[in-house]
Amino acid sequence: MTAALFAPGLVVLPDAVNPSPRAIPVLDPAHLLMDAADLPDPEGGCITGVIDDAIPFAHERFRVGDRRSRVASLWAMDAAHDPAGPGRDLPAGIELRGARISHWLRDLAQGRIATEDGIYRAAGIVDMNRQTTHSAAFAAGHGAAVSLLAAGMAPDDPRGRNIPLIGVNLPPRILADTTGTLAPGVMIAAVLFVLTRARRLCRQVESHRGLPANSVRLPVVLNISLGLTAGPRDGSSLIERFLDAVSGHVAPDLGPVRIVLPSGNHRMARLRATLPVGRRLEWNLPPDDRTVTPLEIWGPVLAAPPASPMQITLDGPGMIARTTGFTAHGQVARLHDNRGDVIARAYCTLTAQVGPGWRECVTVILDPTCPERPGDPWLTAGQWGISIAPGSSPGDYALSLQRDDVLRGFPREARQSRLVDPAYHELRPDGFPIPFDPVGGAAAVQRSDTINAYATGSRTLRAGVVDHQFDRCVIYNSLIDREIGGDVMVRIDSAPFDDGMIVRGRGSGSFAIMSGSSLAAPWVSRWLAGRMAAGARPGTRQEMIALAMADGTGHPPILPGPGRPWRR
Image (cartoon, rainbow, N blue to C red; front, top):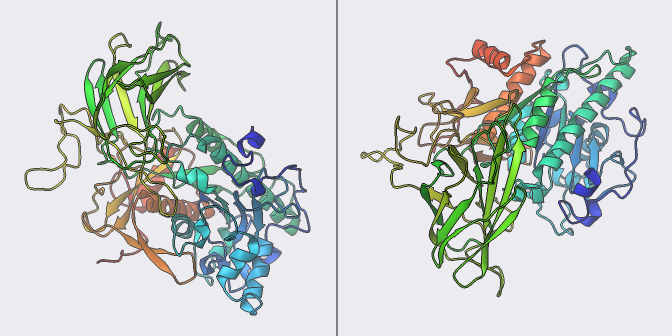
């Protein structure tokens, strides 16, 4: 499965693929994870894992002193594969280990490498000859901000040595695909890499100190500041079940693994709705969208598989109402406009729940509203309509639009569609936004249950954002239910209408201004790693929340943020 996932051209470039992965010794003397002087204390350490994009491993905040690295290992999935490097067991890309990074840092200190950028080029992380998105060349980026918030420390901070970092740079194609179609397998491979290297780091600590095998079991705090806006939101997705299994597993050779996710940033985006059978909801498709537009419709939980599949009706400019004709689950329906051209496809599935029950899902994918090339299919922008056709199982159906906006640096011309309901009001008469769904409101479009679709498992910790001025959940922060914006909240933005905080850029000393729950998650990860390094061992989500309540204020607990943000 892994080999097929990393097939040339699917998620990585052909030169990144490892044609013959093979095992490597746990304590390969030629490729040690870290120099002996940089190993964490076996009793007072905690490994931080970060899965993101373009982690700046040469940054001064990942160093001990000037010439030694706190990065134990980094997997760059889409870098050109090095058959002689330590990542020979990986399906693609390269692995950079701390001992090698420390060697480059010494070269930098002694002038043999002129700049930090020279390290990234020497490592193969930045290579402008390759046809890819060069995220690692950005002056600032998501992965830099997240990883440095999660594990960055001053080089002279004595705590730094006991918080080593294991990171994964995801391929640009995974980050550009906001539908998350290819993400599950790649994300699982990334998590397994972090755990495998964490075990190897524990074994190296044992070898260096002459301790018995499997006696060093450092805990791991894994930060994944990524998410989706569509999905079942009931903990049944593959990624959520896997993360729950990892969090609940007691390993004989590794400490507990705790996982932190952002709560999401799409409360007010009108990407969620709940519909009964037969009610029509408008769907606004913007012009100049060169990407397909996917919508997921999740049916109610059923005690047994339904006798017949759910059906969806779609209408729009230039198209009379068309209803899918599924006769069995697993089928694909093609919907035509009045000229007979296919402009939408619908996929019908039936999945078993984590608990007892079954749930149907239809994914509707509409063609772009702007063709990429002459002759490509396209549809008319404007107000479309969607409904669950009569004859479907009774109950409420959850509609979720996938995120479809432009990510910086990625060559996509995307425009976000919206669900439209006249009963939904975004602003009060005085012009201020309405932050929560009115009790008993008639609108199908909702603000509640807009939580990151990766974050509805039972064991992961969800981080949200409050502002410094009032300690209120910020308006964009997605909601777990009707009112709660996260299990743990962090002060990130200055005020309700003054978002943004200083984050570190790729280069040492550089900075940028960013906002969002993606920044709250690494701050919670940082706090949790510090507590676990000090001996805390919260076992469940509730225990982690209780630990945060002891350190913060309110319920949900509010942790002190990373300093007063920059005010404009």
